[in-house]
Length: 376
Image (cartoon, rainbow, N blue to C red):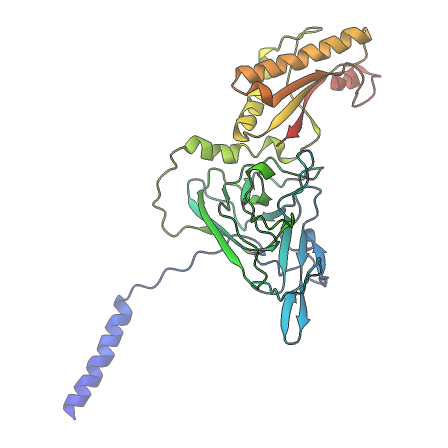
């Protein structure tokens, strides 16, 4: 009896000692993405339709004029399946919850590539120098591809056109994910180091078709359903810096100038010339150097430099002056290491004012140098 009592007391003591000495498991890293599985509508009183603009969801919108969608589910017998806008009848379910997002990732023409993107927000800014994991689950419709990635921005992008965005992804899908008619989701996961404390991001394919690999099923339709987007802080912060750290930094620095405009004429601020001359003044260099950095960060970017004047003086003289000023900007960019083939220039004289020429202030705005993105 005493022996049994001793064993009982020893077991209790051992359990107590074990409870005191066992190291608790560290908490799992939290997902920083707001509304990662697309389940929460922006308006809590709003009922989602089967097909919704992405901006109906909390934390999500479109960075340009493309129209990414969020699809909810249809109940079939006792299960829910994602609504299919293209009429296919396979049983395909959301990976979690009822909703998914969907984007076109390839197609169109060189001049008008077919691209859609979703833009999201993190719960808190990234910490510079820390390692993070980016992940998402993807299911392709009809034909598989690769290159879906995430680009981080200092502010939300709102581009006035559609098509390919000239951002550099911090991480992207290298291997092709094949189309599977079954209810199959493929996890894409990679790591990156944060070089800026950004809180906004865009997800999609930032590469041209020529650099995008495909499954080659000959349907020519690359539509990707996405679910459960993840940005997680790495638990183990011991990492080796990339071999080409400068290139990694450019993925972040390069996502600033073109965040608001593409396929439009963008005025080069603080570019100065002497009166009636086409020689660049030194005050112009900081603004032009910023453009140089952007072009180096996005190696596929090609631009057209455009010169304009106000209406004073002879029409032919103004045309020549505008051409020479555009050429001067082009020459400066080339001198700084940008390939000649990536820059063209043209002068338009006084033919394309952005406002009236009825005051000196208005005329000053018409005397400008712009650049237009012609390829990304």
